[in-house]
Amino acid sequence: MLPVLVVAGPTASGKSALALRLAETLGGAIVNADSMQVYRELRVLSARPGPEDEARAPHRLYGVLSARETCSAGRWRRMALEAIAEADRMGRVPILVGGTGLYLRALMAGLAEIPEIPEGIRRDVRAHHVAMGQERFRAELEALDPATAARLDPREPQRHIRAMEVLRATGKPISTWLSETQAGEGWTRPTFVQLVMPAREALIASCDARFEAMMRDGALEEAKAVAALALDPVLPATRALGLRELMAHLAGDIALEDAVAAAKAATRRYAKRQVTWFRHQIHATNIVAPQHLDRQFLESFAAENLPIIRSFLLTHRA
Image (tube, rainbow, N blue to C red; front, side, top):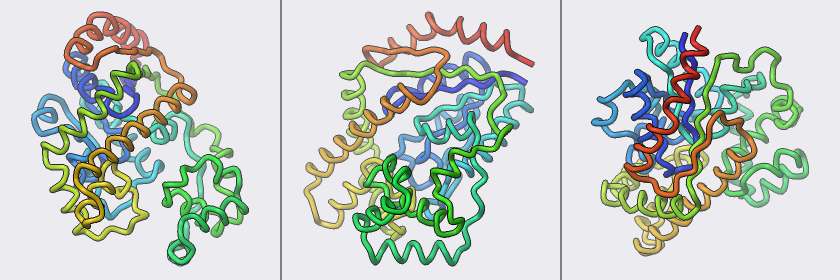
């Protein structure tokens, strides 16, 4: 087996382009570790690799689920392990690329074995959330499980609902379950974690430029198609960056110019949260901090960092 290469970093940091360059150079197979790129209806808004890129190297776990489904960290972990095993059979370096820290942590640190939630409890909790509204529902969770509520973004109802489901079904807070990761479930495969942490100005400019490119590539039409699905607003796919803002425009609530500005701002805020997470929550083997995200960055990375990665792969191959 070859070691695993992880290319991680905030959104719009050039991870996909770098992973593709590495896959072509090292003989790799790319495995998606982005929570939105798993949904087939979100090709544009999730910045999923296009057909031309997918033809240049094997790509796995892109657009494999319906937006009506929920891809939990546990579900992604199982799919990722299968994709890594497939890369092993092909004799290719598994290259995981994405900015969903929870997924990467689930793979490398393991997951607590939380029991399956009965469907009746799922229905009851979701109905309770609708009746209470997100603000009151969050206050209730804070009273029952303050540790979990403190780490959840108030704007992410799905995670609040999940926490309440676990509490109702097991009688134990999800924060307790997460602290009881099963021994031996952690990651033992030699792994090179390449972290891309662009300079602040470069990242801000890239976030804005990428959303503008999305608009040119049909983001508004994609949002319209997703709106037609009438998805439950707690489904993970509804949290795709820019989707809610564009849907608000389509509903006549805000002007397109304001929707685009709001989507850009949301993207920048999300990137900032990712930078903070990666800075404190992941142990990187190598970190690059490009001042500009362009072809020059790829060329300089190839010249300065590829020898480090090659040495790691040769030293740790089984």
